[in-house]
Length: 514
Image 1 (spheres, rainbow, N blue to C red):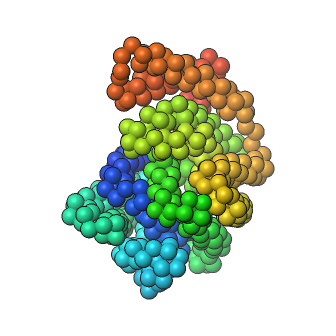
Image 2: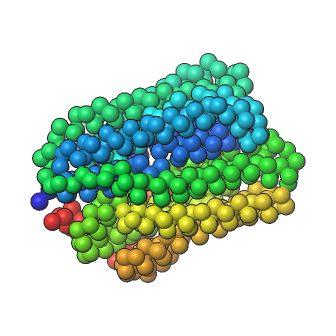
Image 3: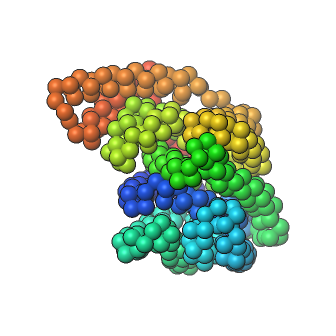
């Protein structure tokens, strides 16, 4: 029996992600103050195109390597795992080089005719060399996920973020006064250098870890038709991810244009777009680091449970993961909704961002649960279903943007986001329930917690207002007191109605692997 390390790895990833997102949020606030909302809008458009090329260069590799390494370690040998990694990394680098050449050669055309802003060209050229390194890194991350050795992946992310922040801080201080073009280019230099060094870090980790692999492999035959198996897993994911990313990139590019038709100002449109996508949404997703560990770790556990036909273990993992995700996300949703104005002021000094947070915060349970369910479905081999739902969602978003935004402006875009962030998670959950047959106790994991957070937040807000009326308090004190009171009330409510995730059952997961 091998030691089951799900909880340990979850803790490593959670702490790492909290640290990274903390640094990232502070860094993003610094960038937004340096380049303004218009600069953030342009930055978001550049990264939209970049993420499309990242998708082309990396999609499918992490999932395929994770699933194949898990399968080979259960039935194959050390040699087959090494051959698998060697061949897939070679393919990934070739794909990354092709994506890099494509981005570099067409950066001027993309800037002029797609982004419709020539200032983006230099940044796109700078980003191109990072793509082959990101492709290889995706394979190594899949390997470490399958091996349940998340410390190396977490270390690479911390290393990457520190390098990025250090380079960008130095360059922005030097070049931010030269305009948005130079400022964005400085940020992209940091991205490119950090991605290259992160890949090197992962490769060193892989070279050290593969020596320990032999004792943990089953020692069977395994092996055969590596590339055929890889393509069967990766191509549906890759094709779907590229299609989905293309649609999202189109969406991000047409939003400022559609908003300009409403307000007749490209600058204002970029500012509104940057305020939502570059400022409000990153803040909303910041606490999701508490749950991202489960999204990362679920796939190998689900894959293994399915391959070993451990149906009870599979159902237990799904139930506890869903329960934990909803319990935490409902609390975060309530706090962000009630204290949205204060968060907008203290973090961005913007009431506009506070308004966007207040509108989007009630969607947090849907946003957070989507990543958990996505990991479960991919572990079950249901990536085609997740692709189908995502493509349908993107098509609906684009259609609504083209129809609504020229007449309703930014309010129409907020409506589109509300519809989208409810649509896809519901379809994914329905598919998960159908495939697994798992029965979820919705009253215990969703309805009662929603009632609890509404009551707790209203009481906390009323109490904070009463205290504030006695004398003006700093905003940070208001947020801390109110959040602590609401959280304690929420936990008390869940405890009273027996809605807390069972610690005993979570511990059972640690010993469930036979």
